[in-house]
Amino acid sequence: MESGPLISVGLPIALFIIMIGIGMTLTAREFHQVTVKPAGLIIGTIAQILVMPAIAFALCWLLALPPEIAVGLVIIAACPGGTTSNLFTLLARGNVALSIVLTVSASLITVMTLPVFTNYALQFFIGAEREIVLPFGRTIAMLSTIVLLPVVIGMVIKALWPHMASRAEGAVSVFGGLVLAVLVVALVYGIRDRFPALMAQAGPSALLLNLLGVGLGLLCSRACGLSRPQALAVATELGIKNGTLGLMVTLSLLHSSEMSVPSAIYGILMCPIGFLLAAYGRRVIPSVQKPAGAAGGLSEAG
Image (cartoon, rainbow, N blue to C red; front, side, top):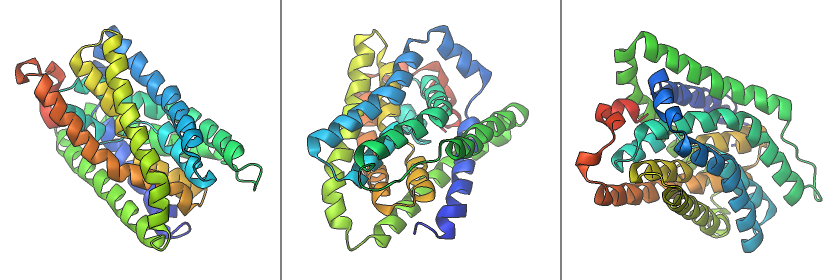
């Protein structure tokens, strides 16, 4: 699976389309609304970029994970929120505008931070055994092309043809979910003989990473005085990761099926956790308190 056209060509193209979809959910207005009171943006961004990878390193140490699984866990932890996080935030009656801006801001910052955390994890867990390095310059160039450029394209489409962008957003979200599902199925099939053992190794750590991210988002946000809708947006961003990006790094750049297992398993586990979080949000936030940004419904959900 590492060298096939599905990974080398299809995955970057699919991710490019998904990131255009994220761009089509964003306008200058959302940036302004969130930056006027930036507490949620600051807390969510720091937690996504710095705290989640730190939690992953701690889990790798506490659970004594195998080196490849440990590197894969750090990679998925360092990935930004996924394209479906905005939809789960909408379902949870969270602050959709904050969710959208967190998704985009973390995606942009990840261009620089993901290679750093990946290379550090490779050196820390595998460096003594064999040399595997994620090329920093090439990775930044690839992530910039696949993350920055399509987001800008999506925003331009949103500005010039808003009605077309609104119709396309839902289709792109569905496409993103299908891409992740196909990749997970193909990966599991490719390592089917070893998958039960790898699931036993990576499953608990992926689940703990997800639950700790959601819990951290809820508790820290509320402790810092954010509203429940804002806290739910931060928690969803920390829990619903861009598994497609994690798979692209592990399969396209590192050519390792075993390192990609945490991203695949995380992609499976995060959806039921997301629905539980949405159910919790709908229980604690009455519909009359739905954020104004959510009134536009699916057009902001990305």
